[in-house]
Each structure stands twice: as structure tokens, then as C-alpha cells.
Length: 165
Image 1 (cartoon, rainbow, N blue to C red):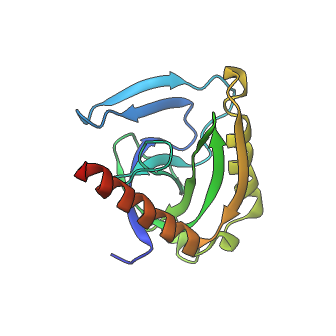
Image 2: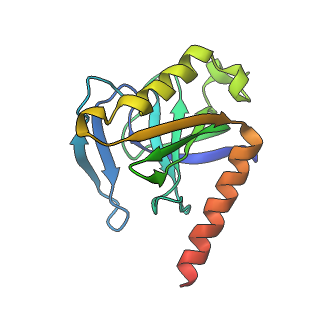
Image 3: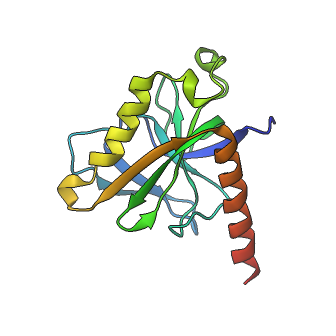
């Protein structure tokens, strides 16, 4: 596998308003909630196994693709960057990637290869999707591929260190 391709485990399909979560202990998929807003997820949304982000959960990933998959699907995702966010007071970075096996994204290797509108749409989603829950989400800026790959390594190390305790 290429060094910029990871296996994303999808929890929430593209265009869904259902917030699914995979219970890590059992592997079962559970409907956590339906989004309070009239918005839907702007991309496939999931996590990277064996990572630990600053919020205490596995590292989040958005996978831009042509069609929705389903909760629990493993998608080869080519990393192109990440979006910084603070969700309810916790650092909550969102990796940005594209489906590696979708020929429509063969030429996408960095954030600049994605339509600025799509990047604005993703940012707008995270700025507003919890408004009706009265939960503050502060969205920062996008970071490029190299920074995203470093973030993955840091979260893998944090996971391994946590396993040793």
C-alpha cells in the first residue's frame, strides 16, 4: 500500500443524517443519534483503527468519493490533508482524503486538487452541524498532506503508548 493510503473504517455514509458509531469492544454498529440540523454529511465519515486523537477517540477521517458506502465498510483512502477543529472544547482534527480506488479521483493528491467549494462545504458543515444542540464547534484552517501524514503517525504513537499502560 502507498504511504499516503490508509484503511478508513466508515461509520457514516456520504449524505446521511444518521450518526452511527462502531462500538469498539463488540464491533457492532449502533445508531448514536440523528443530526439535529437539516444538514447531511458532506463525505464518507469514519476513523482510522489503532490511532488515538487528542479527544480520546480514534482519528476522524472524511473520504470524498462518488457514492455512499455503508457503516463498517473499509475504504482505501488517499490522504490529502486535514481540517483543524475544536469540538466542545476538545481538539478534533478531521483527516481529508479521497477514495483511492475511484478513477474519478486518480489525479487528486493534495488539497489544492479538490474544488474550493467542496472544501468550503466541509468547513461549513462542521461549523454548523451541532448548532441546534447548543454545542460549539470552532473550525480552523486546512493543513496539507505532509502535516496530515505526521498527524497520523502521532496518533498511532499515542495509541501504542496508551496500550502499554
